[in-house]
Amino acid sequence: MPNIKSAEKRIRQSEKSQQKNRAVKSKISTARRPIIEGSLDKEAMKKAVSAYASTLDKAVKQGVIKKNTADRRKSRAAKRLAKLA
Image: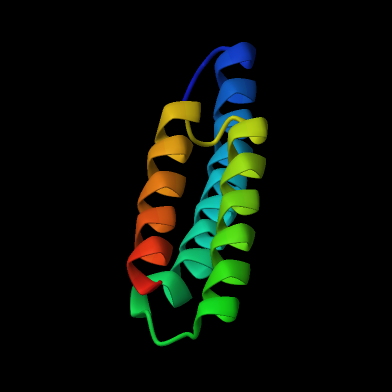
C-alpha cells in the first residue's frame, strides 16, 4: 500500500482507466467477431466492417489504442470484405 497521497490517487486513477480500457477493448472484440466468422452475406459484411471501423475510431479517440493499430485492423477487415466479393 502506498504511503503518499498522490500515489494513492494514482492507483485509483489507474484502476478507473483500466476498467474503461477493458470495456472499450471488449466492444472492439464484439464488433470484430462477425467479420472473423465470415458467415455473412456481402451487405451484412459491409455493415459489420463499417461498425467495426467506427468502434476502432472511437477507441483511438479515447486513447485506448493507437491510430496505426486501428488503421491496420480496418485494412485487414476491408481485405476480408474484398475477398468476399
